[in-house]
Length: 148
Image (cartoon, rainbow, N blue to C red; front, side, top):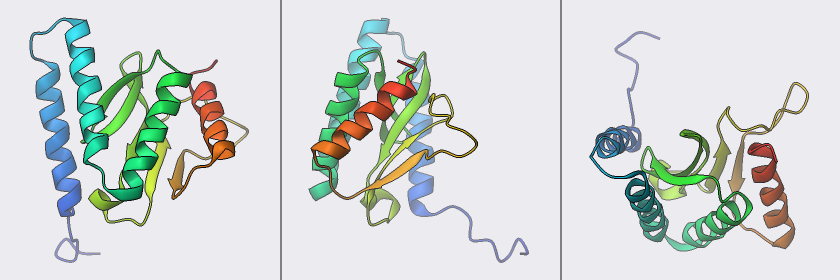
């Protein structure tokens, strides 16, 4: 493919990069660790509140599952999306369907998550609904991801 045929970044990808740059700038402001944590928690909750329809409901459930299962994870935004960090590194994250033009909310894990199982394991899930059994499965994955 020649460079003239490449499309470049989508508007959603460009917006995510701008949001990430703003997150990095904000993290450098002078605040106590507790103030930064509280600000980050509020930003995550505000981001979830901005989701629409079913994505909002799913994100609220995921947030509850994550924070109850692994309270040591730090909520923060990452590329403008809700994420949860362990020792400063993003462990898991959410992406709403609207922002990236998909038909489902995505819940994913980064490589710091301790999910290794053999030579193949899932790191991202498309979610359109959650019942008690699926909530329990996700809670178990979060617990495993933080190696508990």
